[in-house]
Structures are given as C-alpha cells and as structure tokens.
Length: 344
Image (cartoon, rainbow, N blue to C red; front, side):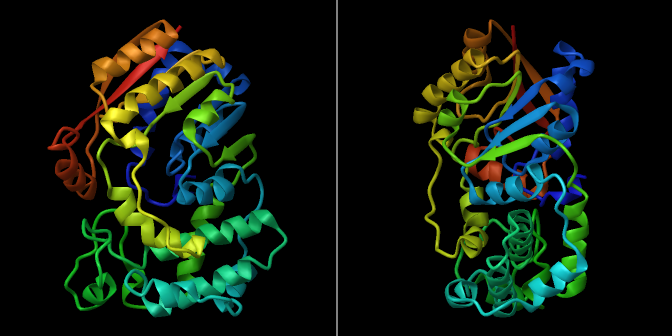
C-alpha cells in the first residue's frame, strides 16, 4: 500500500518498524483498534497510512501543500480510485485558463509536460467529485515531480535545459522521467495503479494548519511527532516549483519556525504539553536536531512523566545524506536516527 505514496524527502517508510515497535512496547497491539493516532507533521504520509490500517482513527496534519495533496487523496480517501476513463480524460484535459506551468515554470518543468499538467488540472477542476479531484491533483503533482531531476541544485535556473543537455544526472527522490519526453498513458496508469493500492476503508481526517494550533485542539492516545529538520532547505528548493504547479501561483520560499534553533524549543514544549493535556498515553518523537536529544527528552519527560532515547540504525539515501551533511555539518548523516519515547 505504501507505493500509493510519492517518494518523499525525509519520509519515514523505512522507519515504520522501529516507530511502531516502540508503541507496541507500551500499548499492546490488541488495543490499537480502539485508539486514536495523531500525526501533527504528516509529511509524506507513510506513518499516517500505516496507522490508518491499525488504529481506530487517525488525525493527521501538515501545512505543506504537497502533504495536503497526499492527505486528501490517500489518507482520508476510503473508496475513490482512478479508472482508465479518468486517466484518458486527464491526459486529454481541457483548456487551462492560465497555462501556469507553461508560462511561469519553464525553468522547472518542460513545456510538453507542463501542458499536460495545465490541461489535466483544468479538467480536474470541472469535477464535482471531491475525492476524484483530489486523486487527480496528486497525480499531477507526481507528474511534476518526475519532470525534473532531484539534485542539490534543483532550485536553480535553467535546470530543464541543463537536464535535457545531459549536464545533470537524476538522483535521489525524483528520477526526471519526463525531462526528455511528455508523460504517456502508460505512465499515468503506473501512478494510478500505485495510488489505488493505498485506498482502503478507515477513519482518518486531515488538517492543513499550524501544528501548535492543531495539537491544542486535537485529542488522541498515541502521538507521532516529526517536526522539520533544523536549518534544512531541501524541501523549499526541491518542491517549490512542483508545489507551485498545483497551487497555480509561485509560492514563496520560507523556512518553518520549527527549523530554527532559536524558535523551535518553545514550540516543541507547547506541542508536548498539548499532547499530554489532550489524552496522550504515548508519544514517539523523531528528534529533528533543532535541539539536543537529551533536551528533547527532558521536554517530553516534563510533559508525560517518563521518557527515554532510542537510537535506530538507518541508512539514508544518497541525496538525503548529501543535503544533511551540507546543512548540519554531518550530524545527521550515517546510520543513526534518534527518537524520544514519552509515556505515562
């Protein structure tokens, strides 16, 4: 079912086993179907999707447009799937009122791919079925992602021309399938088949708002908290163009307050207290490196009563390794991820 989710920088798909193993240490799996799982920083959706299959309900949240696309198309979707006719109509499309990708994103998305996205999104906007519209919008985002190479300089000018000239090798999360040709029906069918595999019955909600506000107003038994990495601009540089393609406006490049050491700690303290006040029996907190793990554990311990640190062997992808070395002086590279587990 995880093939339904796009490959995502910082995604937790490979960390699902240690995350849920820690939950099982404190709460027997037989109880999970009666509990609510809370994911305030959903990101690529792998944790929320697995939780949807195992828990009574899931409350997910993320401010990012890309996460909202995943949340609305996959996490909260119980039955809507893409059919052959949907793909053919999307590929044919209708006239776009702005041709935003073609006119504004020539440095990011090749014109032949941008035209498919423009016309496909214009078709999606005509649909009354919100679930089908959400699935097609995520489909468009995935096409946009694969239209460009996932390199460390992916936010630079003329990246499309450089890719087509063979000056940039695709690496990391995005493979640049459509840098040299337009998407075909077979490509859309591949995406749709994968996306349909993540659609199943379950009780899940998704919000797109400030994480602290979300935590203040959300009750749940088990919480997974994964705030942004400190000093990390990978998301802004890698996803700004493709997010803008779906938003139909050039989105600003800005860093989250959680990604700054001086502003992150009080926000983390607020979230921990909100979780404890709103019924948390257990918190699994992925250390974002904004503050030392020991300090992180103190914050969780103060809110929950007990907390401990878990080191997880985890081999990062080459693109993530390169970016983290550049942004954090190598502190997050290598095989070790750190989680803080807070319990009562």
